[in-house]
Image 1 (cartoon, rainbow, N blue to C red):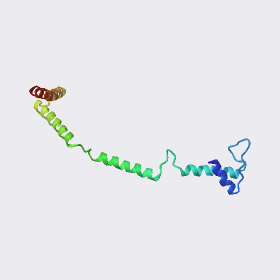
Image 2: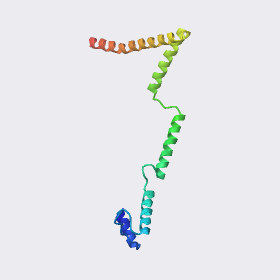
Image 3: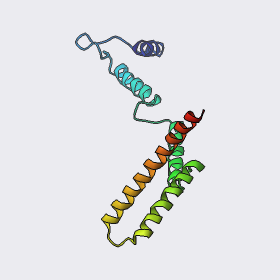
Image 4: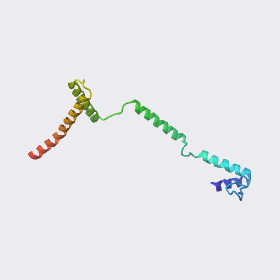
Length: 137
């Protein structure tokens, strides 16, 4: 970067000799001033980590709009998940309606335990069916 500046400065007629006690600075004040301006211009022209280009700003705005839209409408679920959710909900509602729902936590524990037993029975049924099929074959 410094060599490009010095080539430009020499073409423009500036003295590019540096100070002996401070080799990072130029001997002539005007050359030093232009060197500082050159560095600032290069820093301004390139996008540093914290600053975004117009395209990056637009992409970030589009992401925000998409996130806001996703929050406003419910997530789409596939039909299988919806069926399972409806089945579980109906089972819970049936269990609570059969208990009357007056005792609070005791009723909730009974419902949860009943659903666990039912789930275990349903999980055991396919194993029994497969065992029976193997024995018949």
